[in-house]
Image (tube, rainbow, N blue to C red; front, side, top):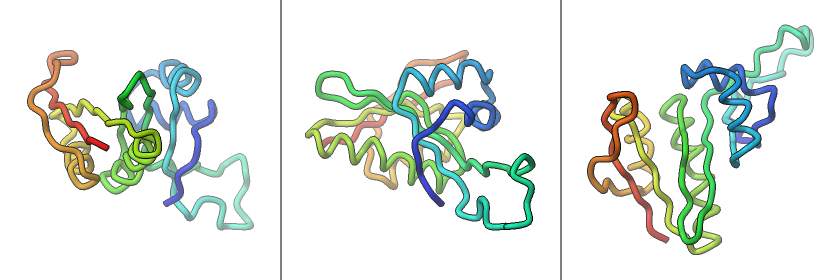
Length: 141
């Protein structure tokens, strides 16, 4: 798995992962720091037609920093991808001496599992989004 900066061309696959409109994902790429995880096998077939090549996105994370905290605004994908992607805002926060916060929807339990495996602690219930309960997670520097 390889992690890289997201580009606008990733918006369609990010939208499919998050079950969200692609224009929302395009705006996310422009407004936040966004990283994507993709399969290492991407582009390994020299006979593959470049136009037919699937980017193989496994997940994405978006985050921004405000004052003394990095806020993970969205993360989704496979559990392994979420775990590797959450390491991105954590590295940034540690370099800057900041904490990291994440709101994980209970309907996507692998996000919470990935957060705990990276070192986040559960901090209780979070807000509801479209009727979906969430939990707050925090990682201190």
